[in-house]
Amino acid sequence: MNHSDYMAQALAQAQLGLDEGGVPIGCVLVRDGEVVGVGHNRRVQRDSAILHAEMDALEATGRRPGAFYKDVTLYTTLSPCAMCTGAILLYGIPRVVIGENESFMGEETLLAERGVDVEVLGDAGCRQLMVDFMRDRPDLWNEDIGV
Amino acid sequence: MNHSDYMAQALAQAQLGLDEGGVPIGCVLVRDGEVVGVGHNRRVQRDSAILHAEMDALEATGRRPGAFYKDVTLYTTLSPCAMCTGAILLYGIPRVVIGENESFMGEETLLAERGVDVEVLGDAGCRQLMVDFMRDRPDLWNEDIGV
Image (tube, rainbow over the protein chains, first blue to last red):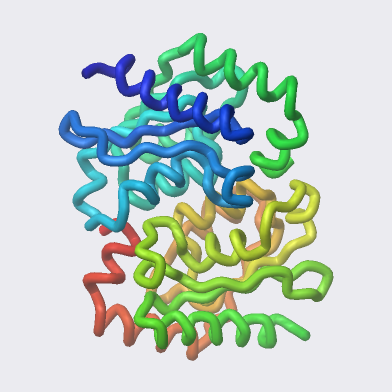
């Protein structure tokens, strides 16, 4: 498995979210080559103000000791917002792989400043899903980023 | 109602969390003098990696349009960690009142740098609850902050 394979799983999560009527962002947490948690944005599905994709994946991964996260790579289809960036910093996740940051630029600078290894794949599939969603549901999108 | 009254409600949430066997941190969100959401850390109670007190209070407040948060003051018994700080920044909450920051110093500098009005009350009750908990349950406390 390489970056593209894990990002494909994150994108499948995003598509699942869209199919459920939600915000199409997905996330996969990988540790030592093993997927330890997957998630997608569930704002609509769970009527939630906090279940962004990254948060949902962290929750799916369960309660873990701090040391667990120091070997985790987080794959997310979209550049992470301030909340998800903060969660990454809280747990000391050292590597974040981002599908795309053209439709929305999150807190990549803050992540990098704090020593997180950030890689952006520029994935066209991730981008198209968001561009279409922002066009079709600006109400949901704005709510999701607090605008 | 003033700062002390709202902080007393946050502290009551923290005490409730302790009584439930959880991490004793509480939070209250106030808008135009009205309490719009309360919460406490539910790591233990919900087996959650993301339900810090501030996140729990945001979730209790429900899905709201972005403009809603711009009149909210967040009261938390303890200096907010990176995750909760990020959530505050995501939603653009402009004012944060902190019970104490001696037992744990969170991301107050980042909040202030981003223009959030931060006030620390130095509340002895909030501090004692955390000092006792850190002494009695260092395992839970370290897990909660990713150490």
